[in-house]
Amino acid sequence: MISLQNVSIQQGKFRLDDISFLVPSGAYSVLMGKTGSGKTTILEAILGFRKIARGQITLVDKDVTKMNPAVRGIGYVPQDAALFSSMSVRSHLAFALQVRRCHKQVVNGRVNELAEMLGITYLLDRFPDKLSGGEKQRVAIGRAISFRPKILCLDEPLSALDEETHSQMCDLLKTVWKETGVTALHVTHHVSEASNLATQVLKIADGAIHTIGDE
Amino acid sequence: MKTRSDKEEKQLTISQPVISFSNSMFFLTLSILGASYVVLILAMLSADFAYMVRETGADQEFYSSESSTVVTERSNPIVESLSDPKVQYSIWLSMTSCTFSALLSLLVAVPMGYLMSRYRFPGHGLVDAILDIPIVLPPLVVGLSLLILFQFPPFAYFAREVVYQVPAVIVAQFSVACAFSVRTMKSTFDHINPRCEQVAISLGCSKAQAFGGVVLPEARRGILTAFTLAWARSLGEFGPLLIFAGATRMKTEVLSTTVFLEMNVGNLQGAVAVSLIMVFAAVIVLVLTRVFGQSEL
Image 1 (cartoon, rainbow over the protein chains, first blue to last red):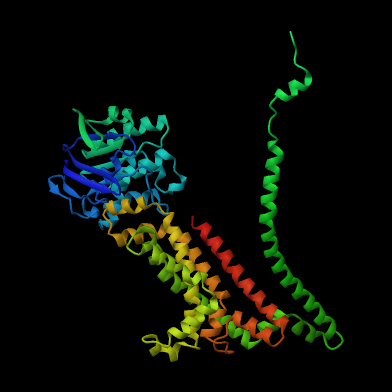
Image 2 (cartoon, rainbow over the protein chains, first blue to last red):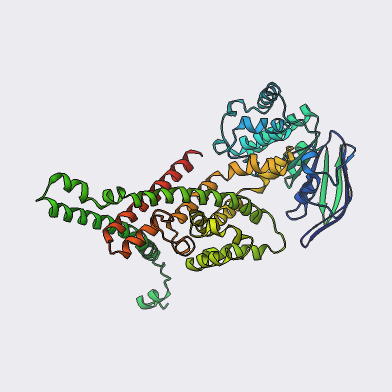
């Protein structure tokens, strides 16, 4: 569950006031809105990268408003994948588990499981500069869910992909969501992503959030 | 019906602009202006080599009537310089002091460059301007300022061990070279996507873990460049050294000082020979950096 209650965010001259919404546990929520409407700002506030002026953010029944981003336990897939250029795909998938000092066997098992789920087993020893756009996003998704987070935040993850890859990635995201049972908040301005994936659609316009679709 | 005359027709026709000639002239002008500097660099180095070759030949002719073994040993000014214990000492001191000052520069430049690149703190602009001072300040003034600084506590307590001693060489080199390293590191961190760091933090890293595990490996080429730049800058440092460390042979003499001292006693051959040794050292460092910098990617 992701809950924002009367959240206000100030970012230079840009301001969002009294933002409130609720994403139920296990839902796939798509947050839509025009460029510059504050979609990414809201996502960054949930992740803890942007301080909020007022309000409360609750994740899985825990108030995380003042919590460090490192302990919020959110999987994060940024727009440009932001892969680590010095690490292989395998290291990306193992990174969060190694930070948590998991046993080598556990790490290897999880890496193989993720690689199989995402169809990137053949890419495990490659580096980011040898990956296509779709492959990069698969790795970014794998890295984000590697430590089994309860919440997954995706910031326009499919915006840079061609049409065919886009539809394959939509299917993949659906599979990942179903298999992991994660609560997802997906920021996009593509209507097709909302219609393909969403169980709930949130729309931001004129500084307010409207829940316009809820299955 | 009145038809248009040929003259009227010509006046009405809109001709295509002559682009291809204009483009050729544009690239020709850019190439000539740019190439003039490349030619100047290569001409300077070639002149040093040509001078050395000419002087080597002159020596051979002069000594050939005496003994053939003496000719080969004494004819080449570089070999002659290399066998001089004073030059050997200055090479040793140059290499070690440059390496020390470059490492010290990195030690400061990596955190400073990171802070300047990632955070906007009060006085950021002022600090940025202060960091440029050693770059724009005349080198002699840097040396003089260091000399004066060591007259005041707490620096004065170490003055006896530092001023006109070997540590002064490293401090003087570091004072200027570090500014170049900081600039390089700031620009390196500016080009690293801050999202990578955010992702690492979202995966459970502390700031230090994200910095050490993600940012530093991403910055490895910049670090190597900053090291090389600091090393090369230290090798060429002369003004601050002369004032702050002095030019005592077999003590605070580095290669640039040797060139100066050789010139002072009218030994142009020796000065050029030592200059060429510096050219070789700089080229080796540059090549090594390029090779390792690229092979890592």
